[in-house]
Image 1 (tube, rainbow, N blue to C red):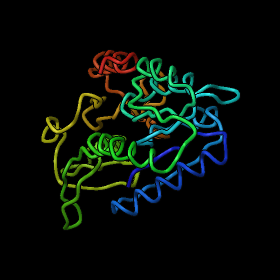
Image 2 (image 1 turned 120 degrees about the vertical axis):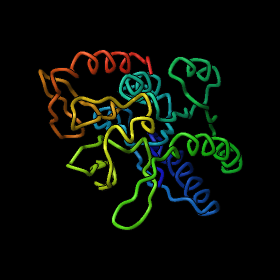
Image 3 (image 1 turned 180 degrees about the horizontal axis):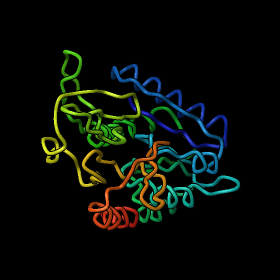
Length: 234
């Protein structure tokens, strides 16, 4: 399942993009969950780092796509951003916010299909990174991007993800090498994915609505790692 945001104030352009995405998914046996937002402010105000791909117009009221992309990069370094614009010169500015590509208006299905092949290949390579676990008698792969935090529960690990909680045998030490640099231990009991950290207050960190305690001996290392993550150090 790929989560895709289409941020476009023009109804016809949004319709064309969604139609092309739906057709591409059907043709390639993929599953897309598409959310259309009519302006960038709605995206930023409710942003939860849950998208794999953002297709975003640049010229919009209230907040431009470029301004929104800068705000997103302060919260999420991994999501793929593709701009939609009728002015090719904006593409150069896109490098500053690590935009992967741009789509020129007026939009047509054929040109968009060609772009989608390249875009989805990139999204698949990043969103497709998985950790394989054994849970309830079956082996499954959890998308690394969608794991919010991992919790120790005796001899088990509870994997809290965007899609639910999964339970497997194991220890934090046993999975340490599998977790990317965006993960950091905050105690003996929790490792958090910093892309889902919403705030740090005192000895507590808010991760997707859950308050987790930061262990005294872990605090300095976590705060340093989180600061580096927020400025793009990871």
